[in-house]
Length: 107
Image 1 (tube, rainbow, N blue to C red):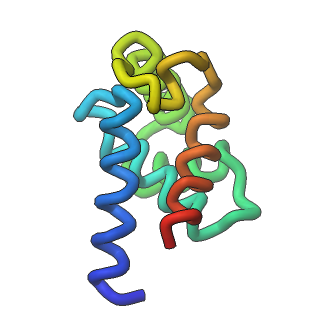
Image 2 (image 1 turned 120 degrees about the vertical axis):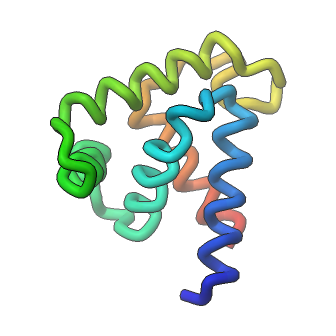
């Protein structure tokens, strides 16, 4: 994959996260989880969290709780009816799967 394609993927995911009210402090985590799952469509949310936790030397449960907090903030702050989290209180796993799907649709 070229750097341009990689930067386009990052830009697309970051825009998706902003549109859904995900706070900036959680965007790097969410970006990493989404890109991990986009590269491994058969992977699970838990597996992606485990990879992130190992890479960053933090407990897996901390990663999963951070994803949950990020999506919870999105529920509270998503202002646009176009945002997935505007009306739906989906789980972090559901939200991330939607993000992966949205990313795959733009490629």
